[in-house]
Figure 1 (tube, rainbow, N blue to C red):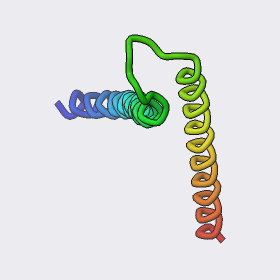
Figure 2: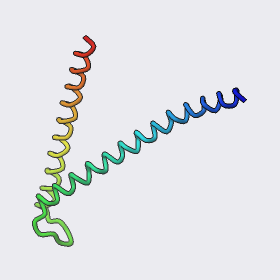
Figure 3: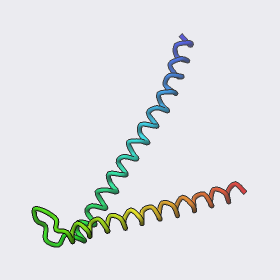
Amino acid sequence: MDYSSSSSSQLDSGRREEYIDQVKQQLAVAQAQELLQRMSDKCFKKCVTKPGSSLDNSEQKCIAMCMDRYMDTMNIVARTYSSRLQQEMSRMGS
């Protein structure tokens, strides 16, 4: 009986890693969706003053530029955060 519980716990350990990976992937997708939603909301509010059935040329350009700036800003923030985190980790290791 100990043998079956031992193999069962090994299986559980392997499955646990698989579940953790799945949860990480789901969180990444959810965060990307949230980012896209926030970006869309902010850029729409900024660029579309008179909502209608379609976007005119200036609204399309404004939204495209707004989304580009938003993504650039998010990338800068992510790189800066990562760099500072690495600096802190190296200080703690020294």
